[in-house]
Length: 125
Image (tube, rainbow, N blue to C red; front, side, top):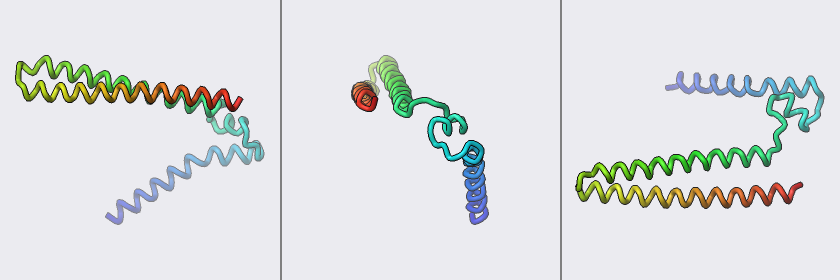
């Protein structure tokens, strides 16, 4: 167990070392400029952080929406193949209700996030 912890510590240390070498070298080569040039030098790009955050949120909520719709389809399939078994129908109904509530929550989160991001973006320009 001690050897496993030691190996994990070494791997984590090397991971931190190798992921911080490029930004450190970029500072020494280009000077202490920490603006958009620093981002370009480290390979991070020049995308506005507000736009990047909005894109991440939209992608995450889109994936959650797809998962919720897949669960609804699964619940429908489960209901249709229950063959009149009351226990299976009850289980399918509860899954369908939970998935529908989840989809409503996801859509609400999407609307609220878009509203907040739009207002933050407009307020900071």
